Image (tube, rainbow, N blue to C red; front, side, top):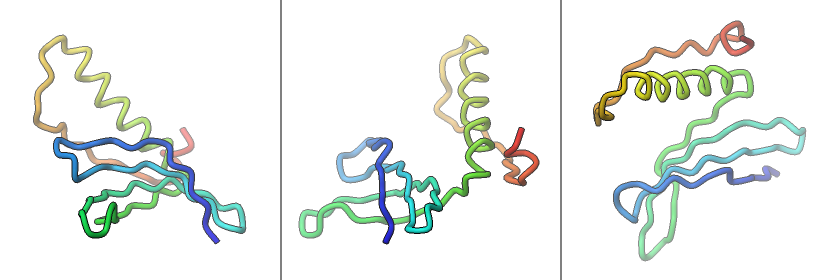
Length: 98
């Protein structure tokens, strides 16, 4: 049995889509961060379109990448550009441990 704790729900530009950030924990106490893209239908309610599991050793690398992009935009002093900043992430154990 998998238990889930929702950390955050990030809405999108329209009310029928959202990103759900959750932690799933299995019976053997293994836990992982999960990102789910969900869509809402009048007939079904919310359902998962896609799902990405992030291993515990990958979380540090993801956090560094997200905060680095945020900091880079703030330091420039310029208006936020709507175009994403491309990045290549390495999720090796060595990178996640630092």
